[in-house]
Amino acid sequence: MRLKGEQFGAEGEEEEEQKLVVGYALTLKKKKSFLQPEFERLACKRGISFVAIDVNRPLSDQGPFDIILHKLSGKEWIDIVEDYGQTHPEVAVIDPPDAIQHVYNRHSMLQNVVDLNLSEFDGRVCVPRQMVIMKDQLSIPDEAAKAGLKLPLVAKPLLVDGSAKSHELFLLYDWSSLSKLEPPFVLQEFVNHGGILFKIYNVGDAIKVVRRYSLPNVTKCQLADVPGIFPFPRVSSAAASADDADLDPDIAELPPLPLLERLSKELRHRLARSSIVQYRYDQGAWDKRHLLCN
Ligand SMILES: Nc1ncnc2c1ncn2[C@@H]1O[C@H](COP(=O)(O)OP(=O)(O)OP(=O)(O)O)[C@@H](O)[C@H]1O
Ligand SMILES: O=P(O)(O)O[C@H]1[C@H](O)[C@@H](O)[C@H](OP(=O)(O)O)[C@@H](OP(=O)(O)O)[C@H]1O
Image (cartoon, rainbow, N blue to C red):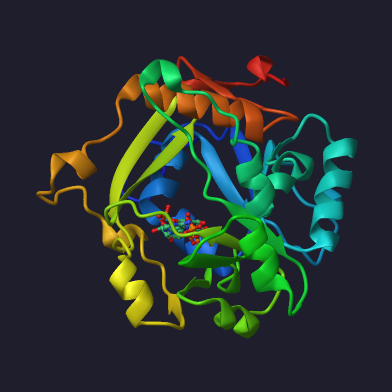
């Protein structure tokens, strides 16, 4: 039996009074990876509840929400979220469509960081030489060569909309294989990086770096010996963690924290240009008075 006014979480823990309602519109895949029971339990303890949005019903008839969390593709949905953001300025939309437009596009995403200067940290930011292919043309190999691209190449779908297709990448060892790909896509030079990469996650001031296995270096011999096109699956997914591997420190040493902090700050500034909204958890409660719009 529950005492009046008392609420308990899934394992009998006392819950905070509900203070923040997050309406979410996510694909089934994203819901599964993001809304894990442990996460929901923790959120619940902090007074945050997650409510599924029914995309077939008007958004204004649902809620009330404090936050709309969404990752769905398609113009129709983007229009709905934009309209809702305008008519409900008190609701934080994560993220506002206009703020994330350029990260939906693999080309514009990188163009924003081309001129990032980290020389004070002995760091250098390089973007692989790249070009966008919008339609099938016999002249693509010539144009790519003219743009200075050299084999091997990585071909990636232009749009990153969370679909499985948007993660289908190819490695190309010869120019003639280009005709096998369906535009639009981005062509990038393959950059040898020792088979290891670092993924940097950043929310607010929190930074988390993980080390992952990646594609091995490509040698000149391989290039000469194995022409063709090779799909590669999610090489650096969470399953490819190299966090605990005993690796050569020359390739595996984590980047220094000040460099990561600067990098995260710069990227946040350059990529999330339009509005950043924050709720502060202050002395056990979510404080909406601290809502910041930059
Ligand atoms: N230009 C490149 N040179 C060398 N390796 C690359 C290049 N581009 C991508 N890769 C390899 O392919 C992996 C996936 O690339 P990318 O992050 O662009 O695609 P993605 O489908 O968005 O992947 P994720 O969802 O894991 O971020 C990278 O983690 C890296 O291992
Ligand atoms: O698990 P890590 O290494 O962080 O890789 C993520 C990718 O970087 C994201 O692009 C994936 O999200 P989308 O599939 O919505 O793009 C994301 O998909 P998920 O949220 O469904 O797990 C992950 O694959």
